[in-house]
Image: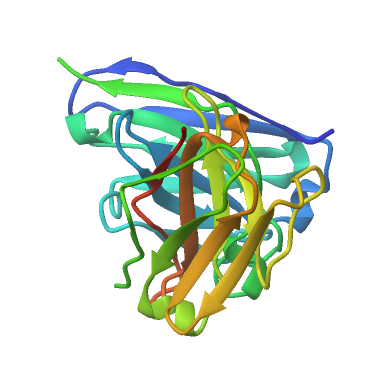
Length: 126
Length: 108
């Protein structure tokens, strides 16, 4: 059974940092590109970032570029999102998401997200 | 960058057929995938590629594609289909993914 379990969410003041982690199990982690997608309650889904299976390729939404960094440790079956200079509009539930393929959006399966974690709530407020 | 446009809300009578549309230039080049999200729950994949359903998704869910528009079709909508539905695809100009704004489906 595929499992994606996020951790590290919480309440943080504007301008501070937070690191999300995602522990993956039940599939070949190093065969899959991984993503972060966020959901602001009452609003829609927003794509945040992706990383290819070997970490060679990454991408970021304009809204987080330069502030967030995605990384992975295939030896630990783990995905991370380092979030710096947090703003109130970063408040959302952050989902760890598995892509069907290894390379990310550049391949046809890159936008097919077949498994999602349960989400981690990040609240940015003073 | 590209955009995907969805109607904010759609309703359907129980047992009837409903079409939820997603429009964007990227869909002329890339297939979309569709996600169902119920309140307080993570999204789940219901359709991807050229009308493919993941294991466990009922056959009443299907997709159609025409030009820059893709549609999720529910044939014989059930009460449990009431949810928010999102489409996504690759951004046609960048190596990123984009989501539509979502459609709230109400089953009457």
